[in-house]
Amino acid sequence: MKAAVFKRQDAMAVIDVPEPRAGAGEVVLKVHDCGICGSDLHAVQYGLGMKPDTVMGHEFCGEIHELGAGVTGFRKGDRVTALPFISCGECERCRRDDGMHCERTRGLGLGQLPGGYAEYVMCGAASILKLPDNVSSREGALVEPLSVGLHGVNRANLRSGMGVVVMGAGPIGLSAAIWAIAKGATVVVSELASGRKDLALRLGAAAVVNPQEENPARKVAELTGRPPEVVFECIGVKSTLGAAIDMVGLHGRVVVLGACMEPDLINPLACIFKEIGIEFIVGYNRAEFSETIAALASGKIDAKPMITDVVAIDQVPRMFEALKNPGARAKVMVEFPH
Ligand SMILES: [Zn+2]
Ligand SMILES: [Zn+2]
Image 1 (cartoon, rainbow, N blue to C red):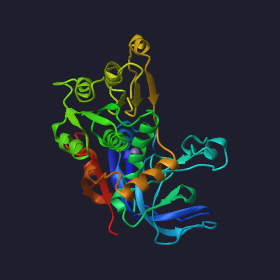
Image 2 (cartoon, rainbow, N blue to C red; image 1 turned 90 degrees about the vertical axis):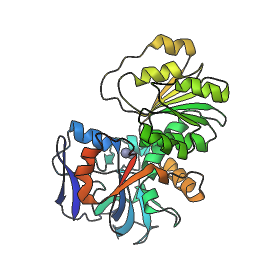
Image 3 (cartoon, rainbow, N blue to C red; image 1 turned 180 degrees about the vertical axis):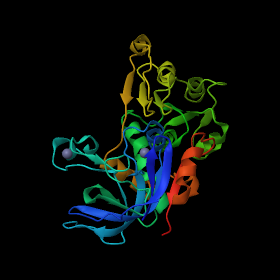
Image 4 (cartoon, rainbow, N blue to C red; image 1 turned 135 degrees about the horizontal axis):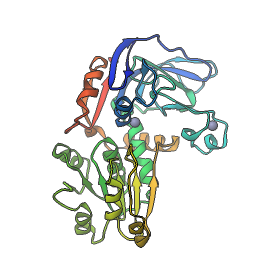
């Protein structure tokens, strides 16, 4: 089968690899869609210890093609998405729905197990969730990044009526914005790239400001009468955490979803005087996947505008190059005929 793989630092390729088989407790999906994630771009740019020919891709959706021994509750042809890891299912972390941090967890698409940039992908039956008929496969592949945004919003103690700044209108910033808006917050998105402005507005942001021209926190104050209660840092470069700390109001909360790849300096006194909390976020849990699927099905959230490009597997290496300068692009879907 065809798969898009990591070859070496800064190089992707499309090659032929053997089709996976479903062992006990596993399923094989025929992939419909797989989203390109910022962490994939990071991983290729930095290498991050991945072996050559690693099949990447962890935001996928497809139909069940093969059921392994002992798998119940699913049938061939069911459309599902999956948490992109296989955890032990028995330890204390797994029992409290934190399988992502299970000591025996193996992730899909970043080197441990093959991922979804392939015609077929093997995943754990305990990690899959069915998609209702009115949730398309493209939306199904958005469940993973949307769950990251939901995980951040859940850690923000966000309540209806709060004022929020989302720094960065990439896919993760947009996911956080979608959920903050759905939970009743007034959201100002801070973004330098003018092409992404319309997208954030279409998703329901109250305003989008260029932080070089206008202070996003001041914009929130204009709209709500108070400094922002929550700031989501979704950029992840040096100094953006400091900017988030400066913007958040008294007793506010900074939620860090951007992954800065180098040491950064912050000013603890600024945090102390305002008594703010800083939450660092990675991943999601199964409950958040379920809530995301239900919200897509009910129309509580509509994330389709996030998808700006749909490409075939052969175009993946070229798209990874293009995404070095994403411009107006947000989520790029790799789609297989289905
Ligand atoms: Zn991702
Ligand atoms: Zn475990």
